[in-house]
Amino acid sequence: MLLLSTRSLDSTLPPAKIAPNLSMQPQDSTTKPSPCQYTTGKVLGRGTYATVKEAFDKETGDVYACKIINKHLMRGREYLVRNELDVLNKISRSHPNIVTLEDYFESKHNIYLCFGLCNGGELFDRIGSWSHFYEADAAALVRTILTTLNYIHASGIVHGDLKPENLLFQSKGESTEIMITDFGLSGILDEKMSLLTGVCGTPGYMAPEIFSKKGHSKPVDIWAVGVIAYYMLVGHPPFDRSTARLEQAAILSGDLQFDTAEWAPVSMTARDFVRACLTTDPARRPTAEQALKHAWLSSKTPCFVPDLFDPDGGPTDLLLHLKEMFRVQTKLICASNRHSSVTVPRIPNKCISNPSSHCRSSQGARPDLASELGAPSQ
Image 1 (spheres, rainbow, N blue to C red):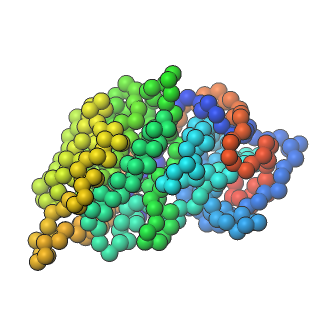
Image 2: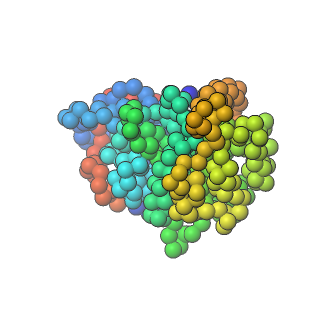
Image 3: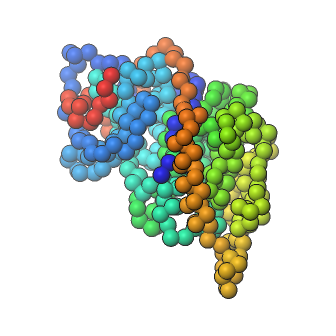
């Protein structure tokens, strides 16, 4: 089920400061390749510059999600790969709810990034498969997302593209964890760079300060959490309008519509949380740490509106309404192309240098069977 476009507006972030020793250049025919240790299975996803496939380790049988990045298509935009690897080197393997970078290597025409496989489904696909969904379930998911985001922000990183498609469940088990994935548009903040510039993210989840191009930072992720929470509670995004121009105007003005009918089953505490996250002024938006202290997430007693048809006064099940709204959103997305990608400005290529601190790949390793990994055609 596709609820919002999975395509993102690519960022104009500067080249990363640390990245694995990958050339990002097509290799000449004299380079001696190393044997490839993986074979691939089904396609898990496709993007503008990459394909994601299952990858099976020939020796161990372990299964990964392999992101295959076409060097030719990425020419002039290599900094996006450098940036993603830089971010992953900093936080991958250090938090249970962040996707893990397990390996990387390159062939003549492609870069390969192997991640821990998350096959439990995207956020809203998973919710739609459940037998019920209460407000407390939404709060629990948002709490996990914010706890992970708090760690990411404490590491000096802005995710920049939080959306349901980048929130995956690790497995299909009932007690599985939700994972934050896709750091391709993330940015690293330090003493020299306290604000990021350029347009990045997916339109419906982008904060006002991104559109205004005045520089942005960690608060853009809190805004995205507010959009996700709104969507999770009533089944559609808060600023969904008939055109991209109207959508952007609604975001810039903070035109939130808490329709009485559809919000009736949702507590006032939840609404207050969403409003706080969707504050147009980033300076007044709560940090991840502050948001976690909001009553909707911190109260020992779950917030809910009693079900009028439950004699015991139990919480209202939101799932039936959500499923119907999810279907409507899917039809709208299929009929519209206004969430298409924006082409990233090309910049002069600079080779990636400095080896990764934890990945297995050795310098110059190139598989001799690139086609076995489904290398995208040029």
